[in-house]
Image (cartoon, rainbow over the protein chains, first blue to last red):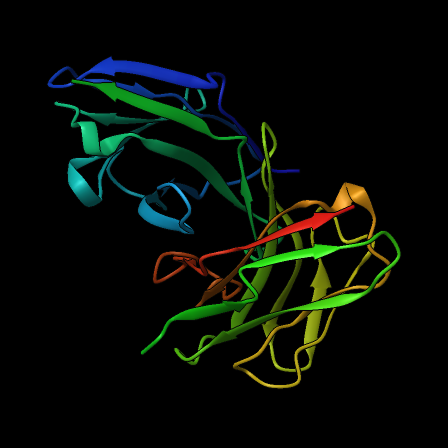
Length: 113
Length: 119
């Protein structure tokens, strides 16, 4: 079965510093990977996806993610963090014959002024 | 265009009671799904539907029923509520999730959630 793992419950970073939120995946076949963000008391919002092509994927709000097949990773990155980036971030993988989006446990990002 | 609308926003039930969480979308999306969100466990898929009249189980379907009589609506029914069903429930829809091959528009649009407490 397809799955993703987010090894960090929380990531703390100072405003202006680069940030990385980690995600590793386990799939059979081609991986289709996603990042979503959840702000307090809101539903999830799509950030970006990797289907095929370039290993560096650019998404919303200045975020990007790097797909690494040899390390089975899909880490979310941003060159300069903002306090407003503080939220819960979820990695997800498409599964079940493209019918199911399976989410990781989430990583809370805290950006300090 | 309201997107995905969930009602109610909050609900408290007693053990054994039944209720229906409502979900409606006005984007003509074929795919709809229900997730529950629990601390430390992320979002887990309960049930999903790839079109009117078609439903299937997700990761944690026990204790929940769904139906899809129209494209717009996808209600989630709790048959006999249990404290283990205390959670935040999210409905989500997508224009093309479930349509092979991926690469066009698999983005999920989420509702704002229903916070359910079962005492």
